[in-house]
Amino acid sequence: MFTVCIRNKASFSRLTPGVGLMLLSALIVLCAVGSIFIGTRDIDTETTWQALIAYEPTNTEHLLVHYLRVPRSILSVVVGVALGGAGAVMQALTRNPLAEPGLLGINAGATLAIVTGIAAFGISDTSQYMWFGIAGSALAGGAVYLLADLNHGSSPVKVVLAGTALSVVLFACTHIITLNSEEQVFDQFRHWVIGSLQGRDYRVLYPVLSLVICGVVVSLSLVKELNSVSLGADVSRSLGIDQRKLWFGASMAIVILAGAATAAAGPVSFVGLTAPHIARVIVGSDYKWLLPYSMLISALLLVVADTLGRVIGYPNEISVGVMVALLGGPFFVFLVRRWKIAQL
Image (tube, rainbow, N blue to C red):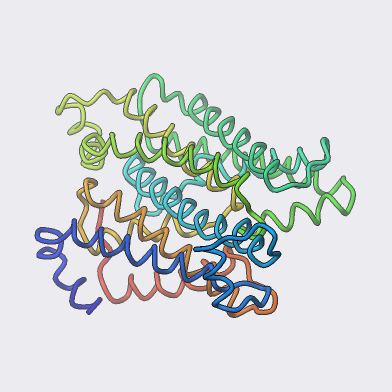
C-alpha cells in the first residue's frame, strides 16, 4: 500500500493530504502509547495500563510509568516534530536539499554550552543540560546571523559558510575543554552527545514543549514565503516578499525548534534531513503540506527508533541517536535508489 501511495503521489497530494495528516497523527499516537508499555524495567502490561487510567502515587511501578515513560514518549514526539520542521525550513531557506539544522551551528553551540556547564559549573541533571543547550543554540544561531550579514541581504552560500566555520571553531573549543577536564566531565558529556531520551522527565518536557509550539507557529506562518523563496530570491522579491524579515523569521524558527530538540535529546542527526525528503515524495513541494508532513514523519521516525532501541537492547537500551542512524540511513538510500528524490 505504501508503494501505491508513493507512485500515485500527484493524486494523493491533490485528494487526500488532510486525511493523510490525520492518519499519520493517529499512527504516531498509537506508537507513542505503545512505547509506554516497553522499558528496561519489566513492568507487566496490566500494571502499566492501570498506571495510565488509575494512577496510584504510592505504587512504585506507577510512579516509574507516570514520571519517566509517559514524558519520554511525549518528548520523543515533540523532539521529532521540532527536528522535522527545522529541517524542512532550513532546506527551503538555503535552497539546498542536503541542508539540515546543524548548518546554523546549533548542534555545536549546544554542545559547547553543555560541556562548559559540566566542566565549570558542575551540572549533572538533564534538566540543567537543557537550559545550557538552549542558550548555546540561541547564541550560535545569532552569531551565524551576524557573520552571514543577513540583515543586509540573504545568501544561502553565506549562511552555509558562516555556519560551517562557526561549528568548526565551537567543536574545537569543546574538544579542548573535554580533553583538559576530569574524566567525569567526559563521561557525562558522552551520555548526552550520542543523543538519548533516557531519564527525561516533565522538567525537560514542559519547557521544550512550550518552545516547540512557538517554533511550529512561527514556521507555519511562513508557508507562503517559504514557497516563494524555494523558487529563488528574484522570484521571491518579485512577489513582494521582504527578504530580511523572511530570513529573520525563518532563522528564529530553526533556532527555536532545533535548539530545543538538541538541548533536550542531544544532537540527533539525520532526522531533519530525511523527513522532508520522504514528505516530498508523498505530497510534493508545496510547504502548505510539506511542512506539517515533515514534522509528523520525523516524529514517527523518532518514536519508532526510541521504542526499537529499548526492544533490541533489552535489558539495557540503544540510544535513539544510534537507532535513528541505523534505521534512517538504509531507508534513505533505498528511497534515493527506488524513487527520484524531488528537487526543491
